[in-house]
Length: 246
Image (cartoon, one colour):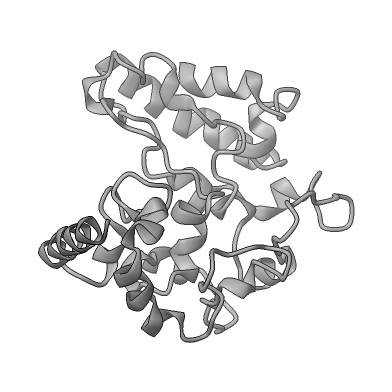
């Protein structure tokens, strides 16, 4: 648990005990943990059979930490939210939908755990591993709000209790003060973007090429809809055309 311990010490929750978030305020829960969970954990530690990396799929944040544990200190009534200008975040709507706070704020206390031993290099099972941070747009918001069904997470969508479908429009979270690249806010952008790409594909791939900020899991963003071979062929054709124009 060293990575969890080290990240907790550096977090904004460093003055809060582990049981404040990872436990309930009742003796039955406490004794159940001590009498059942702790011995099992001790045995797995001795036999070296525990999960590596620990909680690799964020099961704790997604299924175990109840909202009322967070709301002892954090509620919409006693907290001031300091979002960047241009961002809308409706916490009440997400609460009504049945989401836990930690469905999004999953690494709030243990961000960067993969940078500490034994997770960093001693565990061969964890080489190259990095926990997902659901407070980010790509790993978090897109689980429900992506226009691409392949990016949405069915397990997270199952949590929604009020029967509503999460909105997919950019303006759901980005208000008029958020400056999208030229053309992105137009309602017909999905059908017209190919024309922009043909005129200057570097305009698109500055943000959407493989390895860029808004790529598709290490591939060009175009591969969300188009197969790899077609995207590679298009890039080559556009590069040759632009070279000839120079």
